[in-house]
Amino acid sequence: MGNCCSDAGGRMAAVGGTAATGNQNDAVDLYLKSRGIHGIFSQIELSFSATDLRDRDVFSKSDPMLVVYIKERDGSVTEVFRTEVVLNSLNPTWITKYTITFHFEAVQNLLFHVFDVDTQFQNVEVKMLKLEEQQSLGEASCALSEIVTKPNRLLTLDLVRRVESVSSTHSQHRGKLTVHAEECFSSKTTAEITLSCLDVESKDLFSKSDPFLVISKLVESGISIPVCKTEVLKNDHNPTWKPVFLNIQQVGSKDSPLVIECFNFNSNGKHDLIGKVQKSLEDLEKLHSVKEGENLFLPTLVGHDYENKILKSKLFVDKFSETIQHTFLDYLAGGFELNFMVAIDFTASNGNPRLPDSLHYIDPSGRQNAYQKAIYEVGEVLQFYDSDKCFPAWGFGARPIDGPVSHCFNLNGSSNNCMVEGIRGIMMAYTSALFNVSLAGPTLFGHVINRAALIASQSLANEAQKYFVLLIITDGVVTDLQETKDALVKASDLPLSILIVGVGGADFKEMEILDADKGERLESSSGRVASRDIVQFVSFRDVQGGEISVVQALLAELPTQFLTYMRSRDIKPCS
Image (tube, rainbow, N blue to C red):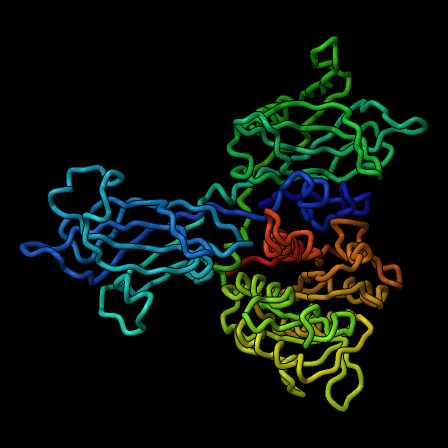
């Protein structure tokens, strides 16, 4: 969703129940998710240079051109970009830049291949060149995450021959390729807009309407895609909403058409359309400068056609300003890290790990069970944002050998160290633990959440530039629901997000209570309300085999939660 944010304050926070803090909101809630809006993106411009290339020409130096490919998970590659040809150079700096959209929730693997363009083809457009007719100078690969997480966004790669990059660890010198990433400036330009309405028509029988706004962008096909919304104001026919923050790149440009719809909130999710207007950001800026309102209209069926009925209700722009806001990538470039932690459910309801029908069954063929798949897919993305790649890993709900049931034990079997090295280390510790503990119960989350919160709290006290992400994988409904809520409310003030994956066939409706996107903001037993939403829950069966992976479903909101924490505490990235 980018940096589209709104504040709900103490009022009825957001459509679908997501409240807001500071000057931002969580931006992606159930209402928008149902329309397919996920994730955070930035436009990244990649520039390239190389040194010490191999000289393949007899009477002159090589004439290099760089080709960029996207590498899919199945190993297939798709060409996406070619630079110009630099004549007679073994140390080229290419002028042409490649622009790519950065998706935090996916691993974007890139393949770079440098070719020496034969002299006879140098007057041919680069896009028309047949690569099989050119000589290879070497290739390199990396994930986009590896580039953007470097403090200077500069990554130098060794170039190797095609066969050597696959089959040999000792490749002949082919020079080096340097890739530099720069976030497009427009990604940071944000419009802060305060909107109000006069004479909102009542849709409720015995009271005034409960209005909120949804702002959508119009795409070429004519479809409107929601990008932002306000909080709900109860029983108010002259509402003034808290500011919304619209990333200009997110909506296209200042003159891109936007549809602003005013709805009456209904708790059953079937919100009544009160009226709407169609304006660009430029139009809204003009409305603010002339201090005039725009009448809402309501499409009304007349005969067989719809006509726009002009309403007396008016939309006003009380404030319009543009600011540069620090992005998720700014914080990464400033040295912030995401530290991955994992907690695995070892309760008896998972079934005997030695039997094929168990959720913990380790298939000799290498086929991953749901626990392994969740660990690998989430860890594969997050590992790039953790410099030492040492991860705390725990189990809960099992009885270690000759001991009582533990609701937070170190997965590696150590009595005093919870760290394992790399995703492979988590996998090995998980497999080993299955044969060294007895599955028991019940399902309690409070202990592992408090353990993760303690690490986050200690890091905060040391002023470390770290944000923590705890992955909990479970097959059942949590037993200590109120204790879990208490732990989550307390943790909401810390640099911590919690991702919960439900595996197996259990009914996870109660688990969705913990995810504020799908219910009210969490409240502790003492009446304290969570300062922000830090939980994402997804049922593995709901996304398995679907169009969206479990990783994307879980990780889509993480950068927004990160930014909400940083901005609400006025933490700025180091320049």
